[in-house]
Length: 172
Image (cartoon, rainbow, N blue to C red):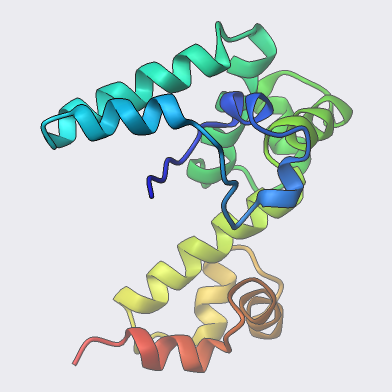
């Protein structure tokens, strides 16, 4: 079995329903790729190159919209200054409606959910690195209304309470 994480621009080449496979996997029948990899010498760089070539052949040249979808994802998951859908739309120079259309076609998550996930990831990373800091202070630091808001987000997106998360990630 071989797995690959795709950039948003590649997703429509494999599914018209990105929401159906988010946070999971999408099996793709590619016997020619399988054969090519089996014939390789096992060199990781060689295998990665072969997979990249195959993916490029499947996806084809990227449109301006596809490039915009990649940029949207980059901003949503890395730019801590983006706190709202309007912030994200402004950073891309598009309307909120265009943003929603792009995320529906290429990502399978709403822009708001992408931002929520990033904020929670930042907060949980802080919790992991600063296990003694009060959760209320961390919630404030990452733009949550209060500790309860941060806790609800964690339970919804991680399936854990923050206390459980802290216990699992605290380094001895």
